[in-house]
Image (cartoon, rainbow, N blue to C red; front, side, top):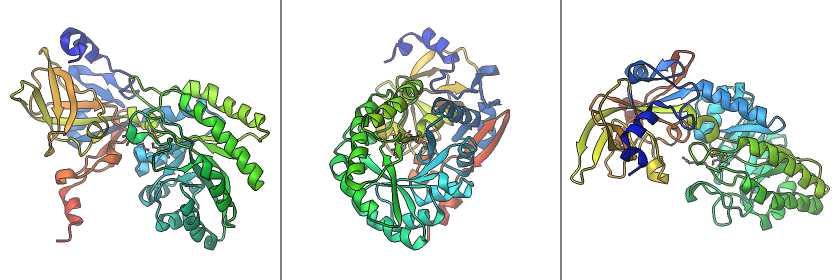
Length: 444
Ligand SMILES: Cc1ncc(COP(=O)(O)O)c(C=O)c1O
Ligand SMILES: N[C@@H](CCCC[NH3+])C(=O)O
């Protein structure tokens, strides 16, 4: 039971405040208990596009991109497309001057179709197929991030025939544990990504021995939902020592260091971008000078930090009930198929009634989805007006990253659309999936 549940009036006053840690930058309270995002009322969006629906505040995304470029003017910023990718999103971040990280043939195709310049693309993945590597090299992606020793051979096999030299970063697992959940910690010694420090000089030599490949730098991605700069500060000495060792052993000067993404958002997890900008580039400069190395060009690749707060998911209440335990369940028309994060990571969300005002008292509620498992819970132990009933629209902010991109069709429930809002207009940038779409894959 939360403090807000215990003190309904406190909850009520907080309710009117749209917490900027979770709501999009343009979110405003509107008449009749509604909220407008991008100048469009959420109730109107629910009526026009149906529910569930993901709403995306594109001005919020643009503002976050600009904040990164302002804070890190000498650092290459790429958007990690796995957080949410479609042609409109790829085009938008490219317009804002960012590159795009892709980690599959699908993401690569979308970014290319959106017109992102191939040299601004970075290909990631611990298990890229030969076909994906070949497609990426043929498309002219700027960097392939090699994740293992055996990938070197597979990449070299598809690079040389293309007749030009593919630029490569080598992903390092520096033995630094970071991230908001064990499933998203990727810098430690006992996980599947990257090459251990001890093996890296050997793998670097293998890359350097291939005429179709050019090793231009190192990459590390320590984990996701990181708040402070500590993990990078812990990893830097070993990474810079490695650059020096590769230089000494192979007589090669590396130019680049990508520090990955993983920048947190939301209450208690907000990434310290200013602190990162103040401390990390200078620490890299000092570390290079200390080792007699030329300065490295830095890169970062945030995903969540650029898009999470731009997203709001709209649901319609289908029904409510009290369980034998007394718990009040509010069931909506979506669930773990459009938001698997509570089930996967225990993620917590705020839920807001939008589109009507009410004088009803606040009541403890658990908002659940429509799927056939009891773990299909979107928000446990929140508070909602006690008169919430079928037909009401509920809004869940902070759902722009890893929601649409992780959505499934579990129970053959079609995936929701993504509606971009800005300046009082709304446009579907990903349409709603239909049962016909689902049937099209079913070959009988
Ligand atoms: C290689 C790589 N870069 C960037 C990201 C983006 O992470 P986040 O969305 O947490 O910034 C990820 C995912 O964690 C990743 O695996
Ligand atoms: N899917 C995770 C983030 C994964 C980050 C990618 N390496 C989440 O929803 O938080």
